[in-house]
Length: 161
Ligand code: SF4
Ligand code: SF4
Figure 1 (cartoon, rainbow, N blue to C red):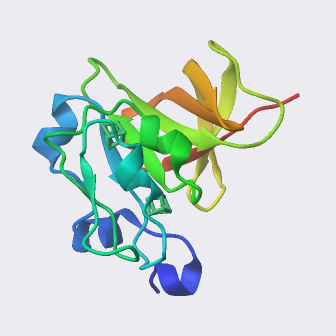
Figure 2: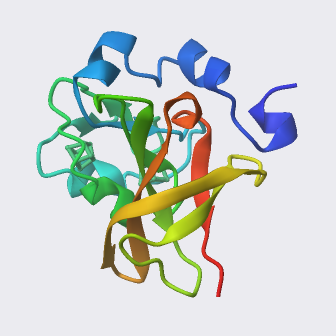
Figure 3: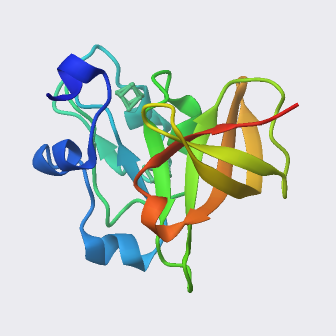
């Protein structure tokens, strides 16, 4: 079953739709992944990117990333109303990666906090450390350190009271 039946997109589907950067690009440094495969009338991310790295052929098109222009700054993550943009950084030495994701629940995450790492379908994958937090328009943009093998699976966090 695909994402239209399950509501949860898989890495293989992102690859088939051309929405995943190459392994070589991923290893170079932080880069955004737009997990937004449906044609919807939204193009906020196109104007949000200060580096003109996101484009769309029509207002209801699929966002396409120029992964050579993207520096992984995370600005678009804060703007996306669909919470569909994530920055993955596989360039770190050792067995850790960074994932930057949107978060819109209370309590707010804080730097150095340990939080639960959630998969696309809400399963707890383990625990990770918050390395950076900032907010824009009531969306927290959170960078968490995760085990490298979960970099393409962690797409949410849970902050315990
Ligand atoms: S992460 Fe930054 S550079 Fe990359 S697409 Fe988003 S806003 Fe543009
Ligand atoms: S802002 Fe978010 S929901 Fe809108 S097109 Fe871009 S990625 Fe999709």
